[in-house]
Length: 628
Image (tube, rainbow, N blue to C red):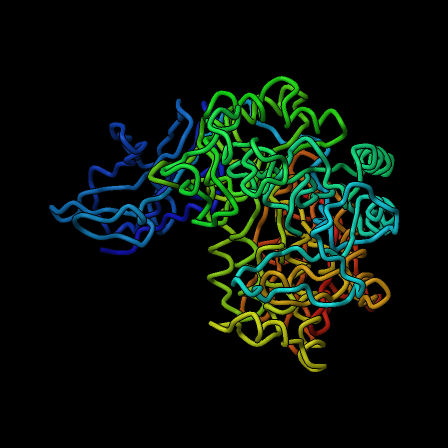
């Protein structure tokens, strides 16, 4: 059989591209050579667990070398749909699917996916075109302000530039109880710096009372950790950030609490006869699942310091999601929304309640979820999740983009890169795409600079990681690669999320080496200025707010792509050269003839556009604004 042509990433074959709103019609085109005489060409569309719909494709255009067959589908239900095409050729049934044409049975992963989402979803205006800055509070900036009621069992580190403790104690336990003293007032002091990066949103890792330095083992959702400051400090941070056009979102850890908490109180910090561990009559006892009271209980991934909660317990749900509950309390104090830790661990009903509580405070309040895979078709604990189709998450942390960018910049697999990017854009609702959290590093992963230029971590342990730093040659090469990665981070769809210190050249392997203190006074000033320039360019056109993506030329050394918004008629073309030699590009070609009025937005060597061409130096980029 001659190869049928259907490309779900191309508007010529599926229009519109990507996910659909409920009730939004879509057109599907198949291109077949005229030498093939097919019958019964059919689109088969279905939702898992529901009957298939069979839609005949009819001949629409036979003027060229190929015949074009078309059909229309309008979805009536939200959720994941799968589809494929089938026809009869030479008396045999054939299937057209993601990996070409074949006979017989095929596996589910070979089906095309169509995501259908609620027609009322939209991206809050304040986040469009924004720039996010993620802060791990203990390690960003220490104000020197004295703090009251700090537990005495905390180890305070004097050397801001030292490596966090990582070795287990004599009992084999890593205590995570060394603190460097970063606080909310320190963040307030650095707001002018944060703003200089173009930041419009600050994402804070956990700030509530907790007894390990990462604070993912919440001890009291109602209080700021005393070492970070007070409720008044938080209100001041939000108010002063707002004056600068910056919103603040918080990290919500709701799948588990700390064992050392007012709720569980395993170690007696909060009294001898209080908390679920010490009192079966505690109001918090029903929150947890004991299998052998008190020492056997369900915990997050078997970590006994993190007892799981029953999220759908009515009292717990009301405590977190109820009127004036935890979610609304901190929004009332100034937060613009929440990032939900381990969203896969949160049941759908609980996510529904979170959404209702947050959105009750205004449609511009946002909810991000921590999801490491494709969030559109994610399954957890045997359940297909419905994160992005309406009523749960606004968007997610974009780990697929992170992996695609870093692997492309380091290993130069152009096809894997474009396939990864386009798959996410094909699967996610446009409102979620426009606010995707696009990062290169997080508190849970290696620093991007280390990932790009450091030795492979392999199975090496903490001692090896603690001792490894980039040598001079690795560092300089890594900075060149980091700049290339940041160009993609800032200009692909979504919003860039800069993990504190990435812009300053911080390095480090996994936790806790990716959580060292921000290197005040030792920053890579060139990389900081590079980051600022990206932010300026990003804000120079509406194309980066909600513009579509079109790859123009991508190979192992160069990546040329456009962002365009047909509503505002604004566009930008980005030329990235990650090779060791300069490259010259024709601005107008068969893929860019839809654009006009070309104006250089960034040209490091001030050469501009000459003879319809743009020159880009090694490990550099150029951006041209234009109209569409």
